[in-house]
Length: 435
Image 1 (tube, rainbow, N blue to C red):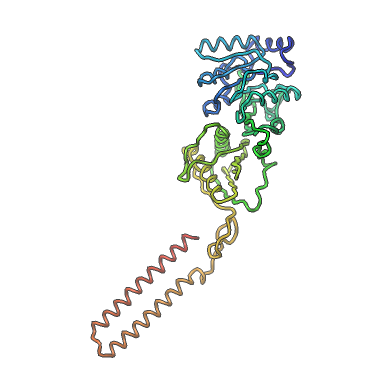
Image 2: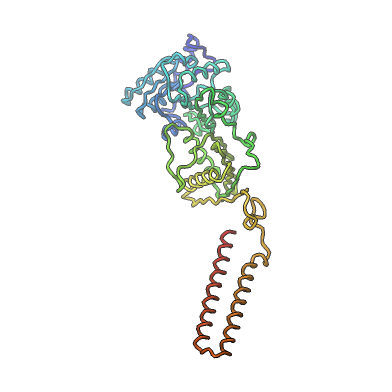
């Protein structure tokens, strides 16, 4: 799976070091795929023609072969490759295993749609890393996906040294010619460490040279969040739960798996259609960001619950983000009966009658006179009409008209009073609904 930090091409020294490494069982060789890469396969992210770099004893190569994909695994350790070939035969799977230097990928017969890298990238020196990345871009199709699992600087102590990667180091390495879809915390399984080791799972897409500036979103962390500007529409929701961190990670992991997967067509979650496509995801246990291009949603986990903040450039985009996030949260949190209620933090300009008193807060209380002004006016009109009709009725009584004419007039008065009362009640209900 991995190649030593000091390896140099296919030299005898490098080959001997790798042979020695696989003369016994390496800690990461757990007899099954790493959970983080297995999750990618389960989500349908591993597609097309696949290259497994540093395949070791072949678990990830055979994972792709089990999906019916055309897959090639490469490594410099011949004993590891022999083990991989034996596994393929015993499992009845077809895969190609080659002894090849990961820094010379351009010599392979490409192109590939997906490249898997389990514990290889982090082992390179800066010079070897540059050669590796050039080779990746050569063998990967435009729009092809690269998935890398590597040691993280989040791992405490000496474990993982000297190969621990920082998120910023990853961003810099893939700053040109790539779109980083996600950098997410992951666990590296090891039979020597029951709880596993802290790692990063990186998803990146190869872009054309003209796409780099536009398609490579900035790192969306709290320290480097984009300036959304004062004209962005925002909404916020707070979900009381004692498992806020768990739901934050679930939501972001799902978003990461759906980021840029070729051919993925999300199911419609609302009457408005499919949820918006996520361009970039980053998260930790306490906070996360999902970038949609036209807006974003930030998540914060605390002991009190999960706080969501959605931002977008117009009403339709904000609604799509709100509906998509709410639908997913309510689905994964159905056992805890989670429900998302959004509150607008900033609204577009409205008519003076309907405008809230303070952005992000409840509407300002209206005075009793203004609140009931229309009702008072309508009541006054009703009394005036009643008085006119009564006056007309008295005049008729004093005249030679018969009593049946008085009954007709009084009936008309009663009908008008009932109609006006109904109008007043309906208008009051409408006004309350608008508020």
